[in-house]
Image (cartoon, rainbow, N blue to C red; front, side, top):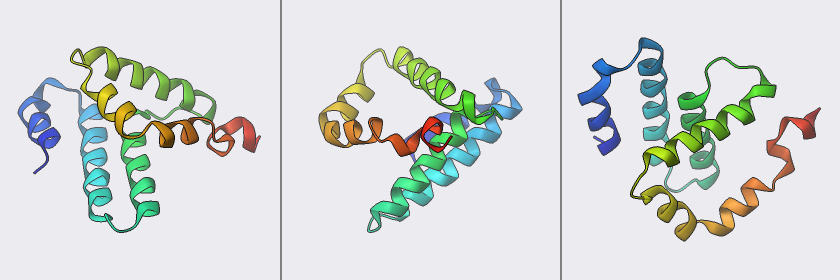
Length: 111
């Protein structure tokens, strides 16, 4: 069992039904991503779906990017020890830059 899953299970009574459903979906996709350790493309896609399951709440495409930004900002605010920042920016700085500057990830490109 994942540490995140253990924490969620101990606190799930504190959350709404909608949040619990999103969290269960996200954890399911995250576990699937871990299984794809030899297939980076599938690992990326299932990780992206896991993240989307957490923050997406039925918004239209126009609101998705803004919602993701708000979600990540809240995550950083809760991470008082800055563990996420260290993991992300120390291990994956080049990957993040490529991802964030990729025009294909933004709805404006497809419009």
